Length: 307
Image (cartoon, rainbow, N blue to C red; front, side, top):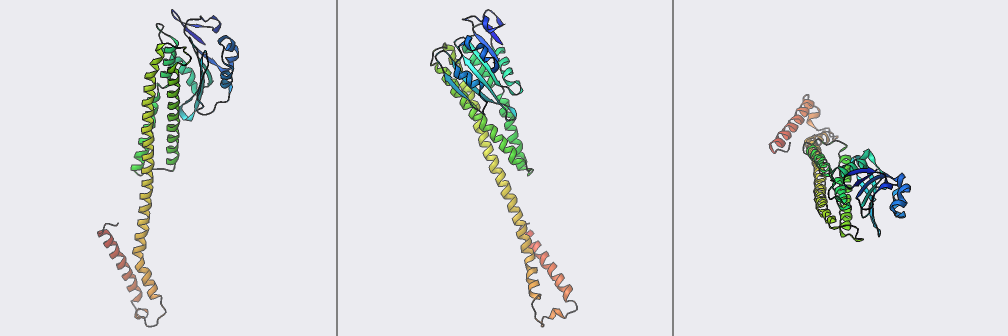
């Protein structure tokens, strides 16, 4: 699928493309062999498009006549999309390597819809592509922020379940993945802006706005990282507090019933001269005495506000 920006936006076959008209293309990696000679695609880059996708494997190669970017894109549910990007003087070609939930296809459509016929060059196509790439990232970060807020509320309300650690680990993994992704986008945009092989015009400097946008996103990710650290500290403090409450409870129980242990040891001694042993009311007396001791200790602890 190729769109050519001339007097109008037209869908054309790659063999009918004009030399000087900007072109935006979207193909599968199975079509690389068919167009390789026509576009003079570097063999090394073509082979990289055929390689098995690895998580967040992003790199940029510079050739005399083009750039090649293998871009790994983190998506929802820990899925990774991968696309190969060939950038020539008048051509921007997207190779769909792996496309979960049609993300790459939708990215191509968004890129096309953001372009106008007038003053459209490959530099504007590049800018439109990268801006479309992070178009939904604000809402993605808002979802992560809401998840963290919900976990914080659970910790405060002591409503933490056994899945808390798993949820927090998933959030942390997503945040780290996004941070690395944004750092790679910034590196790629800066290299393109440098225009080392001089295939772009001055409009490539518009990528500076994109770099500022991604830097803001990275700053937001850093804030979320701090929030996760604070949430983990709060969770650990909550666990320690609950452990302290448990230890306090057992300490109070032990303290309350310790006098009874003394009484048991006292009357368990083998002396025939203990008066209560031959007293008719000796057994009820010990029971009432033990109850009075327990009641007195409980009242004292309440007065001290220990219970």
